[in-house]
Length: 167
Length: 410
Image (cartoon, rainbow over all chains, first blue to last red; front, top):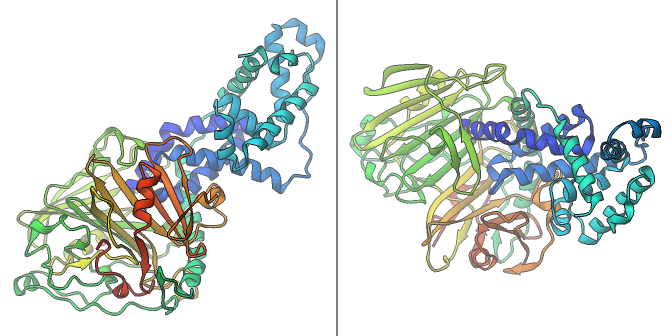
């Protein structure tokens, strides 16, 4: 790869690196894991830079999501630690919405990576069901079922939310 | 939007905002990317061996000579005057000579006018640790880029030397500071760059300017890039670019630049016809130059093809890009192979038209010959891509560029 390719790649990382880290952090909820995820995806992109047609960012994002889900597949039997949900007493001392978000983000971390990936794509990146399916390499129906399962799990973990409104 | 929707979105955005910047993200990704690239070369070697061993089809005629087969020496030619100025090469060249076509020394006006011809050659024997070579033609510019592993370095630390010829002073678009939209719709930000050192020198007696550029804001400091610009003959500009501490390689390549011969920018792919309103404007091909196989490594053998393609310009100034590759790398997460779900047939081959991200252009992927090759056509519509792909055929011995079609487009 030429020096110009490296410069172009470096410029791309400078411009879009943080946006990619945001997605990775939303997926992993952990700084080092997010950095590793993005770094691996960028490395793959750099190795194929000449052959990536069009905007490189969708490619990198797709790799991030695939790697995130794949890493879970490799350790699928490993238990995902469920963080302690804050006590009700603490909840009452702060704004109700904020308290619910604190609980919700703890619950999000408890979701399997694939379900979390679906939620990040749908609710953080505002992707349609079809676009989410394309990124994750699955059918639209799978996205729907994963979304339902994810929301059901969140409902169990954060019963204080008005889940009826989800329907 | 429901309340729960808002809370879920808000929570995810808050979470995302906590992401901290990662120092040296690009530097580390580049280093790791190089290692990955090397690993893929290993996979490529297997893929190419499979391709070479393949049984011919109506579209594919491949004769096995195996990796490691050295290309036949290329006879040199050129006018007497050019020969006097530029000595013949005894080093390896891997593209066939364009017999009867004058080199840039005699006809600088031809440079960048024929997408199927490079009007110069590079004495690659002066480059140590050859790894691969990339030839490219585009309107107004011809280019050869050589990847090499300097002494004491492994393949994960390849260096590059690039030679460009043009009829006008060469300033690559990506060297002008600012935000640029590339031809394929990608936006890149190029930081300002000025040489930290400029030196007036000569190349074969002609005045030249050597600049040393330091990468901006690089931590830890990256090696500089050297750029040598001169006019080897009137009406012709040459530029040699090398990175790292390879000023001596840059000078050696410049001093031995061969303008007395032209070579065909061929590839094992041919378009039997073009869709109406399109024009062939560029070609590229990459060939392994590594002798790693001889040293017990597992890189594709000397002279083996590993990718190629060409560009068509349309009347509306947009382009169609065609690229042929070996099968996709099985471990490349996110690669098109992972997403390949044929939804049409092109010349009897399973293919998929996709435009997943509403880019400026969509992409047609054709799994050629039971997936021994993959063809990509980047175009504005499925019909346009199919019209190009349906007229393509793969021909020749992958290890012998001399057997590839003389013209990529008939």
